[in-house]
Amino acid sequence: MPSDVEYSPVGEGLGMSEHWLYVWMRRFSLIAAHVIALGLTSLLSLLSRPGTSLFSWHPVCMSFAYCLCMTEGILLFSAEGTIFCFKSRKGKVRLHWFLQALGLVAAVTGISFMVASKNVSERPHLASWHSLLGMGALAATFLQAVCGVCLLFPKLLRVASPQRLKLYHATCGLLAYLLATVAVVAAMFSNWFQATVRGAAWWAFLLLPFFPALVVMNQITNAYLPRKKITS
Image (cartoon, rainbow, N blue to C red; front, top):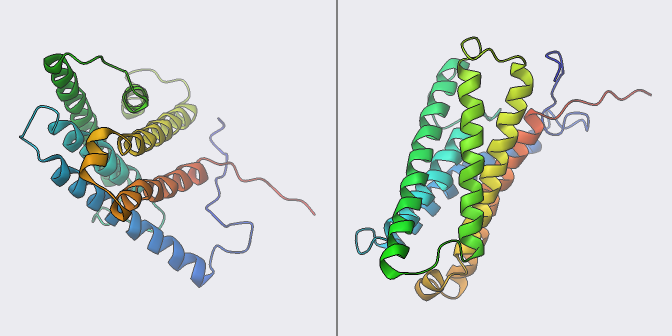
């Protein structure tokens, strides 16, 4: 990707970049994404009752990894600002790396608890859509982490095209986040979750993960979407 490619924020080209209603809608969406990320992680952790079994730690670790760490790590770079105090690009990158690394460790730990739980109960592995999507999300997370390491040390690793690698990093990150979101939704169809949450609360849990995913997808695609020059 050429280094001089310009990128356009959402709404630019439609005459919306400075419209007050548009600005406040974006700010509200960002705040709501933060609240849902923290709230969903907390609720899933409480419902799983960590410590009661090996399996109980799986929802805790996975929700912490993807619903919280990855969400906050991406929203750090939102044009509307962030809940964190970092204003410099360097500070945001460092915090992004910390959150992503913490999320990856939590995800691997969560998978380990699930593997151990199924080994004890002698149940088959990768036997559901939830488990397949979860492993896909973990694989994409490793890929974006590798791209991120190369971006962190471009001279040492002799990266030929940092701009193109940034695009790969963002694409793998978005893929990992979307796969994780669908995996979380698929988990809500499991026997464990449906036995724990019923009625209107179940529908609320089912819809909640989609809102942060839309905000994250919107942020990434618009940050890396080339601006099309319109000629009259």
